[in-house]
Image (cartoon, rainbow, N blue to C red; front, side):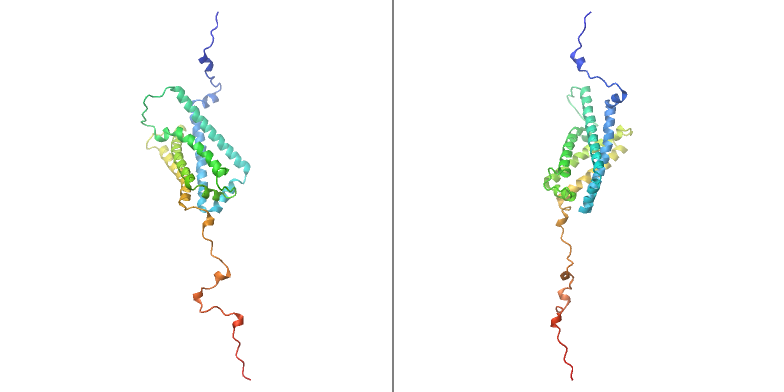
Length: 275
């Protein structure tokens, strides 16, 4: 009898997962479910983050008090940060794994590709995803750690916002929100489809919800750098000082009296009484 050596292709063949959970989570449906669930968590986070940013329109005290509230429990804050980091990691993993499955299913691309039903938002997910990840890293270094902020003050969030979102940096934030709009719109709509909402492509409830949610979030984010660049929102110490309350300010106007009030030593003496 002669033994047949296994071919190199057979040796490189990946071993399929043995239990059902592993098979499900590595399948196309499981990966799409991971993307949908992590997309829900990230969408809720960006909505809450946007609402918190709007405190800037209530002034420095309101925004700084909000920041202090977030830092009141450091352990809880770091737990949330690590949870968000894990969520982003799972989201990226599912996306990359799905790309790999699609590439394995069709090693050779189409000779000529025409898009009849895919929207521009869906076709640009490969681009907007990495760009948003790069922007997220910059945003953390800019307004969280202050590494790339020109005048960062760890105790004055309002100052960091109004001095850091002007000029080219503010324009970059606005462009990033445009990318977020594309990514978020397609992501929310796809998420609702993955979670079982029976919807068509046009005129559907899921599409309307995705549109409204995307507009609320992205406009809420973009309005802050836009108004900072326009000078509508700026440092509060640039406002005119309040009216003085000194004795000179409380004195009546000069045209309201005929002459300055006489001093005590200027009062004429009373005429002498006749004897």
